[in-house]
Length: 419
Image 1: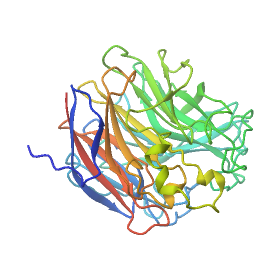
Image 2: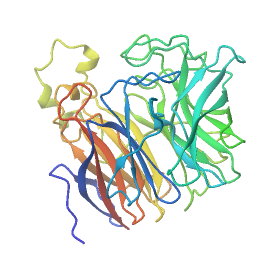
Image 3: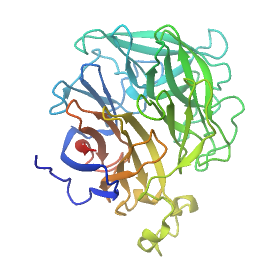
């Protein structure tokens, strides 16, 4: 097979001698799309969603500020076609993850769990959808409930300073896992009542924590199970944008690994008891993608942007929104974005390692020995998503451009992995 490398900005930054990768078949799949989320049914049908520049229809209790464009592929990612939910209503925002239930249904939820003032204190409601025929038809939207006794639904603005109105809520993000006993575990982030530390760049936004909630009834009702990470002194945003993976092979079989954004570094924790308790969180760095290597890009910004906010002028980078899966060959694959510098990348994105990456681990997440920069030095939101194709390739979704930039678009490439 001939491997076609993406432009000149794809590069192996850390080489494991037992792993060989090649990046190829890079293409736009969603014009004007940003910030992808990608899931796969048990049969291999792919559900891919990007933000669109359109305004939402405001058809649900809580709406994301932007509309969505949802795509489906039934040919292992070779082609994608628009996928529609209901005429005249906003599609669910697929940030909450998707999972195949023990009865074979493909189940997913909207990202928001919103407060229910008329119900019991600290109860929230969510929106559910499911398909029993590999996404050819859908049932939904249905409603489910969350018991979140410590949550503060109204205590924080979003990252643009917009305060919650009479419909506050918290976020489900990236992962809904089905445990061996049939319970569902979902990763969430938001504020508990004790979380009062302001974010570094928006004082109306409080630093968040990450927790997991469990359902024993197929997703009809979730209850808080445990906090994964919380610390008012970590990062600029606290802990957020988590992703979970259950390691099924190797030394740590049965372990659940959680990776989290903080607004600066990436952090991780793990659970060996199906989410009931977690290791103490620790910083995770990837070889070749050091956000504190200021000497690698300092010269580009000397004498520039003196009049901008000092936080925006910081030359440190940040890591955003990881995704992680276990491949059939036992490798863990993790996609993530790096913003270099964390804020000045919006003025000048041309630092080569300002981009999107894929890392691989042979030991269940203890180390990440092979790191690929998929794209670098171009304007991007740095959000990514990945799934394994039927042929063993990694399908890697990302974007170019940004919210106020021309030429934006959602892209997909393939990474061939041999080990």
